[in-house]
Length: 111
Image 1 (cartoon, rainbow, N blue to C red):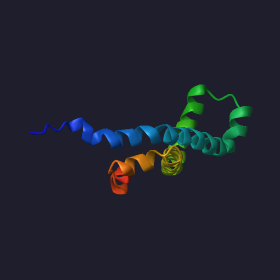
Image 2 (image 1 turned 30 degrees about the vertical axis):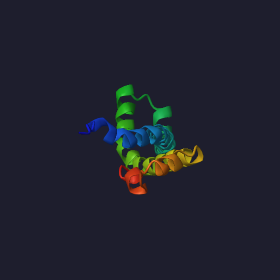
Image 3 (image 1 turned 60 degrees about the vertical axis):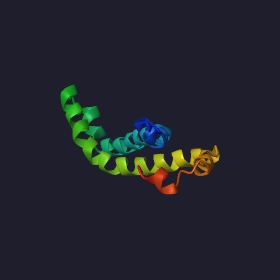
């Protein structure tokens, strides 16, 4: 009788998520900063030349953030997954997974 542990079934997807997640988060941070700065530039004159309270400036920033995240989350996810799989391909980890019998569908199922 062979005992199957449940955590071994999630080992490869967890490894792939761990390999791509830092790139997704870094891409999200960088893209959000660039697009937020571009959107906030429209309000720069008002913010610099008037005495606005900090709470109002934070409110303006909070109002701009959802519109920026609508664009940056999908782009950052795509860029992070591409960079993560590219690194895994460069390190021959994808070849090792394929040699171990893990198919491409299993590797891409989470993405």
